[in-house]
Length: 388
Length: 202
Image 1 (tube, rainbow over the protein chains, first blue to last red):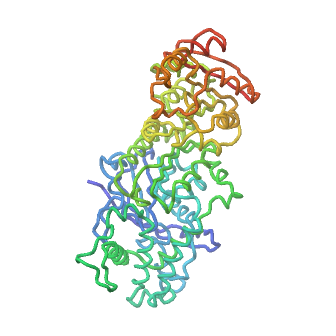
Image 2 (tube, rainbow over the protein chains, first blue to last red):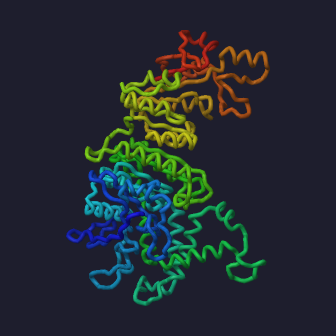
């Protein structure tokens, strides 16, 4: 059995968090799940960073949908990230809506939900909150921080901002900056939300009629970017939905339409439209190289003692191999020990969430060697090699 | 030195030339046999590049830092002189741009160790001369249409290129596939050696 506790802590009560956007935010509540138990030497802590619409329920059932955790395949007793061995933490990111402070939380100044008065946040702000959570949990240093997609972006910010607090870092299907195409797709999603009359400038919390239509369209668009043409063709082709012929109307004639509508309509049950705006914005603002005069390698100078692993997927066109390789080349140029593989699959960006033996083998080897080289009491081993 | 299980004899010849504690890049590191040996016996700071997923996975499981890639495409991103020694073992004949790769090795590494299968060896010459077909020998065991080797060269060919590019040849170690060294000069070795190791410096 996975021992899991849903917890929530309030941080930054005494001193507010200075956000990248210039605002200060105090009394930030962080909701997190923890699995397993922390070793006496504190050397078995693993932080899982979730993606855009993910949450802290990485390995446990989701309280709203009742579905298994989003990475239950990987995390659990005897699994790849073995909760019998490791103390695994996953916290809901800043700006989200599953218990961590975000636009749906109450603004203490007005006693009303923040709505779009909530300050715009960045990926690094999310990471600062995670670091503060670890302080309270008494974890100085992580054995590993791992995440895919936006989770990978958080891992990269861990490398730029708190490299001394991590022994190893795994980045899956991610990027160090959002491209014009990435921003473009997010903008379509945000415009869909804001075009829904129920959005009402972000003030819909008291109305009981949230902008479900808009958020659902946003999700449908985004969902296409998580798949690949091959995956869609294999899964649906031009198959019709419970009918023999097209209806010459605008019903969901095709299975793919029905599938996307379902994705959209179930998403709105568990996600807040304003959170979607804020988190997509945070991702769009990500441009790590720009903070270092355009040289991404300089972002990782402080991370030379961190063992890194980057994985991309052949059919991922959202964060394609070329973007992941930019990270790898920069890590290499900075002298950070890094392993990289591009894994063959038709599953598109979503691959990091799905069954994939090659990915598992790589992560398993990486985690095992990270553990072998980690001496928590004495700090980092500093060497990329290991004695056997 | 820490004891470690023995490695393939021709890899041992390479290992013998690596300084303890050096920064080493092994291009085409396969399952990481050489790199792992160097990390364990010479405490090198070792990195690898390997094209196959299976190879990368084996390397990562050994705790090595290896990226999936190849010599033609992945060297340009490394800063100048970021390694003490760059190793390209039995791979030069399989790259698209051997000259560019050779120069890249010496840009990113202070020294380079290049080993090649010798296409000038008498078996090979005899096979082409007598049989009239592209040689298939112990060292070059694939037929012309399915070999990954696209730029064959002899010991003398590589030596010509080295001279042409003003590269310094620090050591020349002709040897057989089983790792046995041959004590002979370039011309004789070009007849008799299965393969040869060149230690180079720009």
